[in-house]
Length: 285
Image 1 (cartoon, one colour):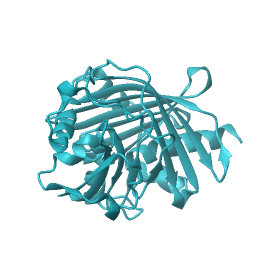
Image 2 (tube, one colour):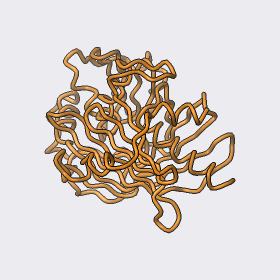
Image 3 (cartoon, helix red, strand yellow):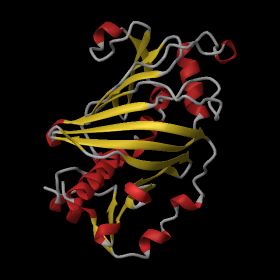
């Protein structure tokens, strides 16, 4: 495949990580059912899951991403992912590099602003998440997607919605594990979720427009999460694009990054040529 085509696919991966709706994510091996330390259990699983959610305010991780489109696998791309949750909102940056460490894309989500630097285009594409896209996605839907960045990276936070109750896993077709607890939350739309009853690790989150399933666990623990194992493998299948996106988290530290860190500074992006994101999206059709 030509280098330009590979770059387009990598850029598409960056866009999908931030903007896709109706995504389908399927796991590799299931999370290991290691029991949560007794010091982390209160006897109320919902309270314990919410406690884990509150304990995660940031993620600094290294990962690998591979795209398969129409059955053709592309080379693995290394990514650095930084995410922070605070009073000002969600901030996330994903930088992808190819062979020899060459940057393929650099994407930043800060509050409601999305910026995507594509070196081969010598331009930064931007979008206000409060506004709509020409593909029919409304501003309200994009803002909702931005606000759910935390839910995807911190799946325990889906249960922070006050109107959350336990549900029968028999009524949740995508909850397929034996050791699981299932919940339904009514907040910004309905969210159904399943967690391991032993480890409180996430199995699946499902909204009206998307489904997220988690698998595996990081080899190295003791990096800020004493009460839970963080998933290590996510596989994304996008039916509309005949595309599969495999994500493997290699290592991660938690709560060491703040919203004020230079990684979330927009100035380096704003100093380059700016173009509307719609131009890039339309050019990929």
